Image 1 (tube, rainbow, N blue to C red):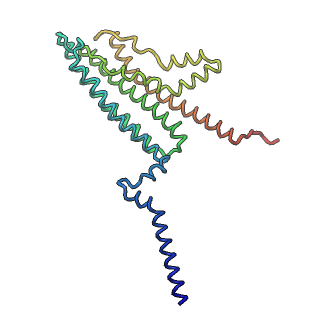
Image 2: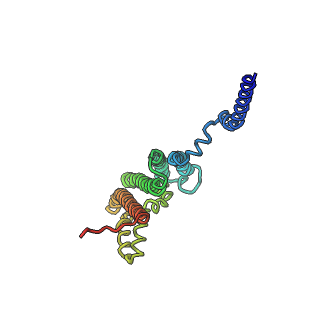
Image 3: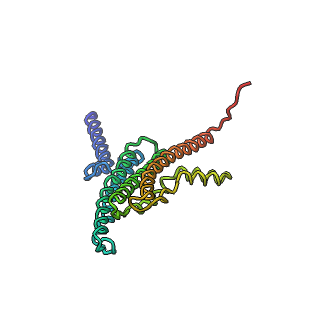
Length: 275
């Protein structure tokens, strides 16, 4: 009789314990029945997903930039600004060629942005290196590649204008002029350090050497000055790429210097030779 009562008591306690566990597991059961089951894991694992989020932002930005460039260029077709509605056939033909040429530039520029996003999303760096090393280096490269691509189409426009004598204009280059500062991030930081160290004249000289004025030789088609202008537009592409690689190296060097300094502050030591 006593054994039966003990078993009933044990079963009752097991039932209570099971009901209690079910009650405590209610949030989990409800969460698993929601349409998106991994809400919690995505938030808790957000640090490991930041690279993927950055890549997704750049991919969306690539589409937005492509559409924005096409809109900026194609709207010239219906805006009566006195250029495309000119009675001169050469002006009209030159304007249409300009639109077609720069509309083609929208797609490789968008691909540069997308490739940058893919590179960031595949990064395995920790959060500090991702934000302060991978992202700035990616932005420097992005700026340099876009400026070089725009410079390439500008050089092609100058060459076509030189050969055909048609007024093929640059309808896009000024839209990306703000990328020059972003692409010079590494050297700007270095020059500021040199200026504060009393080497401002040297910093100014280096800045002028890295950014020469290549537009001063522009001229009319089939003239020496015009040929020099076309030549200078192609040389400008090389200058942009050289500045790009210099800025990447300089920024990585400065980041490594700061990183080493921080590590030394955390665990200072003084190298010496044993006597």
